[in-house]
Length: 454
Image 1 (cartoon, rainbow, N blue to C red):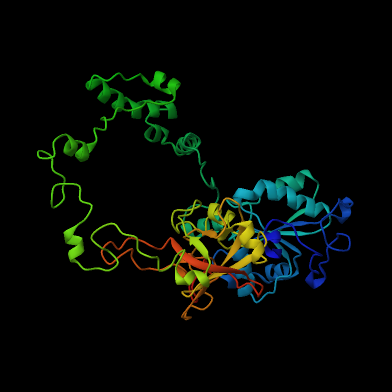
Image 2 (cartoon, rainbow, N blue to C red; image 1 turned 30 degrees about the vertical axis):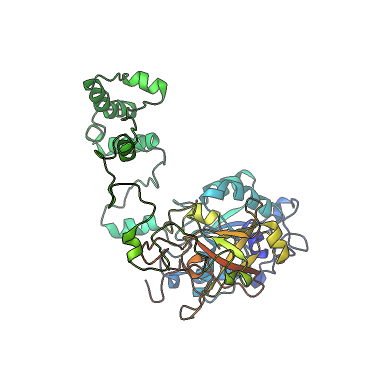
């Protein structure tokens, strides 16, 4: 829970003492409460960090990291990796500061600064504010009269320009283009105008005229089939155009019902088959030739349920596609202390002494993983839910029963197929037990480059 509070900018107890004589200006106890006089307010330092190799860090950056009391980081794991690479023990309270939380977190950090604590702002790589989070916090600090300073260092923009061979006496830096299509097209059109190629880029069309141009072939195709099709202005006003589809006529089952002899089904008998002599002939005990109830090996009512009483549902995640972009802001915003959240009913949590936000250990005979508990009465008692897709991060890769510290349920589920014949996936369901994890929480290394990588 302490780590989770840190992520949300709420430190429990007193703030750590600053190293190197860089003491907090806040009152005893270190909590950011109230506003101190202007000459006692904190300083916001924008610290440029290495673009790639940790050894490119300056001695001053190392000193600032070691003495910081509050660090606002685009990726809290990245700053911990950097400190570890520099053999620095961080004493700071570390809070996340990335695009999705920038506005809210900027207001919280201004309160921290006004209470007398210094804040060190770092991004994943390069200089804060340059195509990275930082602008809103700096603007808010300037508006509040808070001192802002910088620790100069690497910047991808000037580094790339210096080695490009392009003229460096003047250049234009645009940063990331707008996300909305219309705004992005206008930005590119402006750049094309500066480069003298506006006509070639826009072909003389505005964004709306491009939409009309794209819509027109569809309208003509509908008219050719004697289907009414509005002009673009009418379509735009209506907001949609429902395209015609062929009516559903029931397919092969409807044809079979009307005339079984003329339209047989694609089965050995040409009929609906409840039992299959072909499947029965395989002699598979786990796949008889007719529908049957087979006692579960790993589920409610099985022998394993006595030791592992909770049914785990490992569904597809809502914050990413399978495991893709697990490192992205959307997926990371759902994590609990950087770990995959596991939903558990309050009744099951209370019976195990688990609180909301606790780091917990899920385990069975196959393996174990750590996750962040999220209490929810949206589940029935006896059921827990842990999404698939967290990048595998074993504490000991050579262990026979690995512990994934990041929360990948693959260490818990079985890779056996539904039967010897079907081979469907059974990886979404299994039995587990959960306990609160009270030991030292292992660091997450899933997104760190492998040893020796540059």
